[in-house]
Length: 129
Image (cartoon, rainbow, N blue to C red; front, side, top):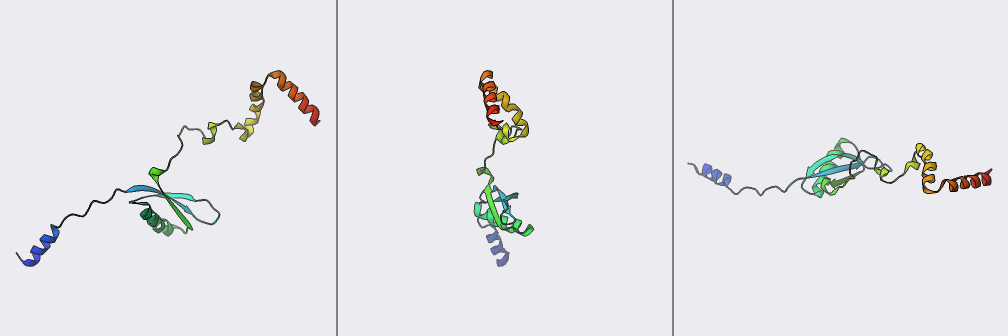
């Protein structure tokens, strides 16, 4: 066997490379123009936060011009439970909708006695008209 082949076989038998660190999923948010909010642009896999930011700037900055890039590890993000209802419905906020005002009288009557409500309405109307 030639010396060249022997040295090539020895270099091929050299120790293996260390295992790669585990990849994490990062969510990418970009800001297209000043004064606008950041928008979710997508996700990518990276070893750490710095690598994720570099990859996000290379990839998403190439697709469209953006002025700011945020990256966040998906595992560090937390969202609300999905119950099928809108989020702010955990607290009664029907007054935010026009249909909520029709329920105010019924809620007021449940809270106060009917006599108190009638007395309040008389005084209220008397003072304003």
